Length: 136
Image 1 (spheres, rainbow, N blue to C red):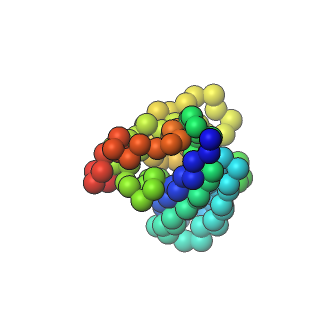
Image 2 (cartoon, rainbow, N blue to C red; image 1 turned 90 degrees about the vertical axis):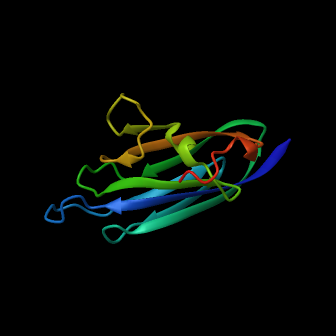
């Protein structure tokens, strides 16, 4: 059985030091067979990625990923996560971040200082009563 699942993830570009020669990253967010991309163009720009996916019953990874592995890119910070319009609050910290070229998995990191992949595992169907509503 498939379940229609709507997920919104908000991310912000952080140039860190404005004097550094870094480019703004293109980011892809994916869930199931659905994907969406955004090219950041300025410091502190925030973008909301929204995906509606038909998911089979069970666990699925929501992934935010840099499209380039070039080290000289602005950092990205995940600032919000909603499933079916409900903020995940503290559950957002049940994530994993791995920088490209590294084997080390960082749990609970919302700040991506190096290009890499950020993942959050959600269940389909999502039980909204399990969310930490309002703790964002």
